[in-house]
Length: 402
Image (cartoon, rainbow, N blue to C red; front, side, top):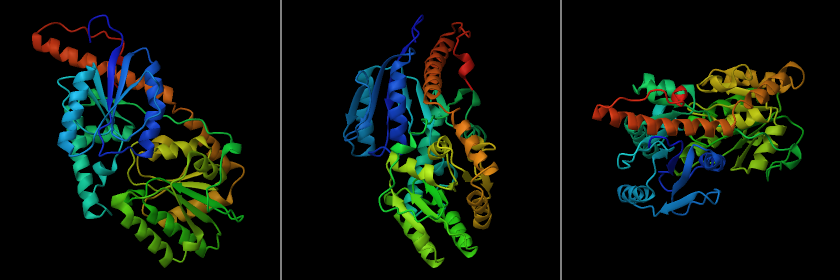
């Protein structure tokens, strides 16, 4: 960054296999307008695969490339970056790309490939996870700076991968305030019958840990607890077999009639489920920043969560926790949540709602810009050091390193 400059040109490179997940789209939808307005960003450009459309401000330059063979596509993206001449490149997808010596800020948003790449997955998906983990590790090692979206991610990077803690910045994702309950819409095919609802949402894959929830439903049924379970989300190409296994498991335990597989829900349908469930359950084994959990918190749900990190980091004392892999423990916590919908137990939901207010997209954008500025500063310091010139260490952004 030239001496005296207070803003930078930024390119966000969305290096993916051809599409964007729903959660990642939400991230971009919230972040791009805020980054655009930040005084630290002079110009913002975004690179996406062909066919991907974004809800971005007019002043954001959006360029796309034709997906094909990974390496040939990467060459096209590199040319686009050179043409844009950014001061810094943000790659939020855990990938690496040489941007001609420009500083790069990497982000780790998916912990499944890093922590449980194989368990429960079919062989092709397990191999894809191993490749994703390799690419993410390469990205973290070679990037100028790395954004960790939770302390859990930061600790993994430093303790397991040996990434220098000084180049990692902690930046939580945000969550919007919940909409008015009157704007919520009941999902198609869901017919409330007066029985309490248990709600679970997220991508359907082995890391989701749905075995716990289905097993807990069988135990609740044995205790004559007439709860109904709504499972939102859909599998991708590599995890359809897991969905079939879970449906067979439900049939074998005799609880299929108590479970609604709702598929992919709209935001308004999700809100209806959050507002009307007696308990929201998160059984995931691998999360970086659990966005669906943040949404449940903002809606004031009574949450029953696995103790797997980073859930306790986000929830603190605003949830009931169970041991992952123990459906009996989960059933007991769900029974407590469903039987106590007033007084002290509803207080847990209010605590969750209050805690969710800490996670604001505006803060996410501000801290992201700090990391981008630090990356430019760090690269300049490295160049100055190589030339043997003194380095000014009094930058006002130095306090944003952790």
